[in-house]
Amino acid sequence: MAWLRNLSKFSNIKSSQRANKTDPFHLLPSFTFFSHFSSQPIEEKPYVKPVEHSSGLEPTKPHEKPRVVVLGSGWAGCRLMKGLDPHIYDIVCVSPRNHMVFTPLLASTCVGTLEFRSVAEPIGRIQPAISREPGSYFFLANCTSIDAHNHTVECETVTDGEQTIDPWKFTVSYDKLVIALGSHPSTFGIQGVNEHAIFLREVHHAQEIRIPEEEKQRLLHCVVVGGGPTGVEFSGELSDFIMKDVRQRYTHVKDYIRVTLIEANEILSSFDDRLRLYATKQLTKSGVRLVRGIVKDVKAQKIILNDGTEVPYGLLVWSTGVGPSPIIQSLDLPKAPGGRIGVDEWLRVPSVQDVFSIGDCSGFVESTGRPTLPALAQVAERQGKYLANMLNKIGKAGAGHANSGKEIELGDPFVYKHLGSMATIGRYKALVDLRQSKEGKGIALAGVLSFFIWRSAYITRVVSWRNRFYVFINWITTLVFGRDISRL
Image 1: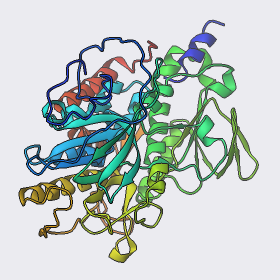
Image 2: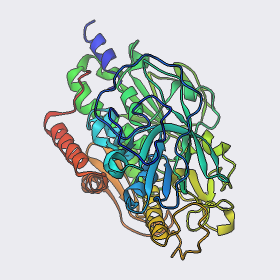
Image 3: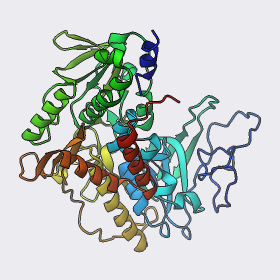
Image 4: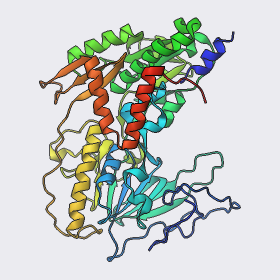
C-alpha cells in the first residue's frame, strides 16, 4: 500500500522452440518476448549487436491456415481470441502486456483486498493455441504502423528491464487484422499530469500506489481526480482500508490520513440521481472529502484548481476518462467522432480490406448513424465475442485468407444492449443501476444487498476458474483477518 513506508517511519519517531513451417525469427536470438510461452530459463549468451529488422512472419500460403493478427490484450482482444477457432485460423497476438487485466477489481489490489495475480489472466490461458499451435504466436511488442495495402503490421519489441537491449523491429503479415489497442488516459492537456499522476489502468499502476515517503500532512493525503466509477471505487476502497485497517495499527497518525475526490460536475453522472446522492452521503461518512472543481495545473507536490485553490498531495490518482492513444491517432485509417478508428455496423474498418477494430479504440463512423459506444468492459467483451463468431463463420466459408474477395453473408450487424452499471463505494456497500440508459426506467439498488450483487456479478466475469478461486479466497481472507498491508 502506498503510504506504508511513511506510516512505519512515523511509528518510530521460451527456452526450446517448436518446429514451425515458417520460422519468423531465424535471424533473432532466442528471447521469450517473441516466442511461444515458456517457463524455462533463458541461457545467457554473449551480447551481439542486433540487426535493425528481421523478416518476421511472412504471408501465409494457400495450403496453410489463414492468420488473424490481434493488436492488444484488453477486454475486446482477449474475448476475441478466446472465441476464435484455432482449427480455422492461426492466431497471433501483438501486445506490450502478456496478460489481460480484470480492471473492475483493480482498485481492490491497491489496498490489499486482492492480490495482483488475482486480476491478471495470462494470454496463454485465455487462448491455449497461442502456447501450443505451431503457427500461433504471442509477441511482447508494440505496433508502430499498419500497411493495410500490403497486409502487414510493423512492430517493435518491448525491452524494459535492468538488462535492457535495443528494441527489435519486425514485420507481421496478416490475413485478417483486428485492432483492439484500447484507449489512453485523458489529461485534457493539463501540464504535469503525465509526470506526477498515477493512472489506475494496469497492474503496475496498482503496484505503484503501494509505495510513497516524506512529511506527514502532504504524504498522507491522497487526491483522486475524476468522479466516475473508477475514481469512486478507488476512493471507497481506500477510505475503507484507512478506517478498518490503518487507523487500528497506526493510531498516532490517523488524523493526518485524508482522501479527497475532485470532480468537475457530479460524481457517477451516468447513475440514477438517488444512487448518486446515496454514494455522496456514504463517501462523506467514510471520510472522503468531495471537492467540485477543475484541475488547471499539476505540480510535483500540489495541484492547482481553476479558482486558484492549491491542493497538496502525497499520492495523485488520475481517473478522468480515456481518449485515443498516440498510435491510434497516427494510423491512416478512417476516424469516428472523437478520434477513434471508424468502423461500420459489422466492426469492419471502411475503405480497407480485412481490417477490423473493437474495444475502446473503435467507434462507428458517422455514415452509420450510430452513436459512439462508451469505453466500458462490457462493450469491449461483447464486441470481441461478436467478431470472433463472425470471423469463424468467414473462415469456415473459405474466405479466411487475405484478399479472398469472396462475398460472404455476414449476418446481423453488431448491436449493443446496455446491461446496467455497478460500483462499490466501500464499507460493504455498492450501487447497482440496471437501467439501459440514463433516461430509461429500471431497477436501481444501493446498500449491502447491492454489494453482494456487485461481487457475484464480477466473480462470474473473471476469465478463469483459477482466478475466480484466487479472488474468492482473497475476499474471505480479508473479511476474517483484515487486509494484508505487509511490504515485501
